[in-house]
Length: 142
Ligand code: RB5
Image (cartoon, rainbow, N blue to C red; front, side, top):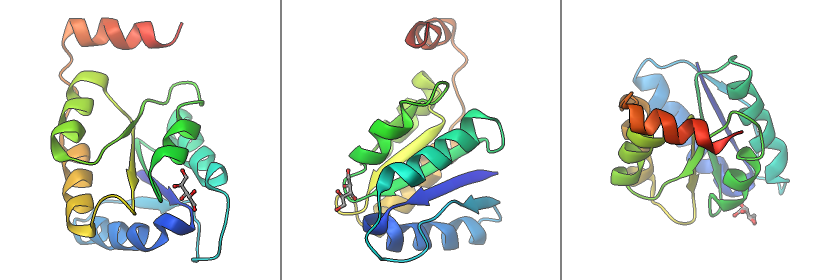
């Protein structure tokens, strides 16, 4: 199960991403926002991050205008490794090296086509399980 959320700035891209996940047969839960009315990105970033941190959802996708506000917020939740990505190389590397569990993107930064490719790369790339990466991840918290 993938948790997905956005503020108003990411609403349209969230809708496109959900359609794409559906077409791929991937299950998701939409944590809002549910319209383009102006809203506060921390509300949605916290909801998605908590769903991932609790184990209710395996991974999360967050979108705001820049991707910055949602990524800063998500990374405040213990257990969350949220990566702000604007390219597929970063999306692949953050899964392999950081075992990132939440992807953040900026809807005013990346176009829809690139955003879908970044999301696919993030969702389809496994963690490397290399000892050095496990060690570094364990050093992030605690
Ligand atoms: C909303 O205008 C904008 O500030 C928000 O989407 C995001 O970019 C914040 O980081």
